[in-house]
Length: 344
Image (cartoon, rainbow, N blue to C red; front, side, top):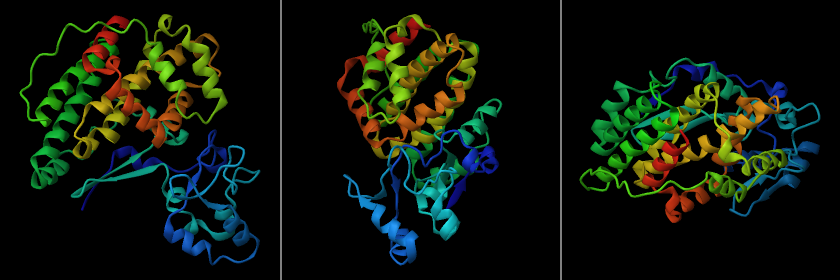
């Protein structure tokens, strides 16, 4: 098995109670079966509390349910009682590995950091140029070519998509539009069709508000996040992302490309990942512009990190996004290209 890592991966270290938005906050905590078996043997007050708090959620998963927005084992010092009482080796797989993400493609694994962690987000935002320039490369392609043509094709298309997004000679909206157009052709090839020019008969949606309305219909953990969306929606069309924001968002967009593009090997659709980037750009870019006017009540890193935590890391929200992409014609490639060109 070939293991692939970006160069910044090894620089991550959890900062524990110094973190401004702990992974112990807001989320239910998944408990894997091996850890559960051990927890059933723990004696004393800690064992009693574990067995009391370990429940089955609506998806049939065993979890510690958040109470008042906190894991029940996240103490008043913002440290983990299980870590303190039982040791790091007895954390669940989720707690032990987050924000490290391992994606197994059969013949190789890609290892990444999640933007939902503030410290991981800081590391990725500090990177110059393309932080994934050394990610995989030749070794990954050689492994993919041995495994099958489709993965090799997707890896090359992913690299080209990243190059388009980093072409600073044009506004970011045009880069996103070009990336959508390129991947529309990639999608045709995946489906066995001949690449062909896109229709130019689509009109741009008259407003970006429909994207905010969609996000307000999602599962939302933070009241502050909901209020930020509600405050901006009426003015969203008049707000424009700054050049400084675009430089940071490039890293966020690349993270999405390298984290989700290859899911097309299973879903057969490369456009889902690109449409998600468009949505993230529309929402976070306008929130950032609004925050700039207010003296940044939430720093830009936290804005991008919060989007990742609220939207990307919710299974329900991801499914809702994909369902809207399939249902609403405003999310067709030609319509999104027209929208991006209209707001550039």
